[in-house]
Image: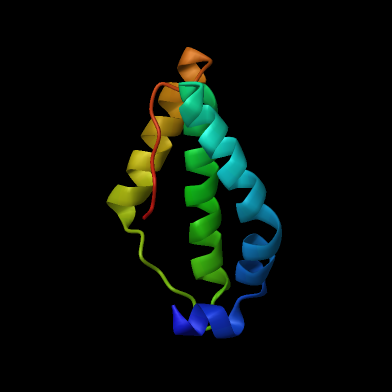
Length: 91
C-alpha cells in the first residue's frame, strides 16, 4: 500500500471526499437494517478500492478471473431481481 499512498491521486480523493460520507451512509444503512443501501454501498466501495489499486503505479492486480465472475454474477442477479439480493467486497 506504500506505493498506493505515494502514487494514487484517487486514493487521496477517496480518503478526503468519498470515505467520510460513505461511512455515515453505511452506519445509517446498518442502523436501519437497510440491506439495499448496504449492498449498494458495499459494492461501490469494493469497486472503488479496485480502481485505487489500478491507479497505483505500478498498478496492483489482485483480482483474478474468479473474482470477476463472482462480481458479474452478483450484479446480474441483483439486476434481474430489481433490488440487491447479494453483495461483494474486495477486502
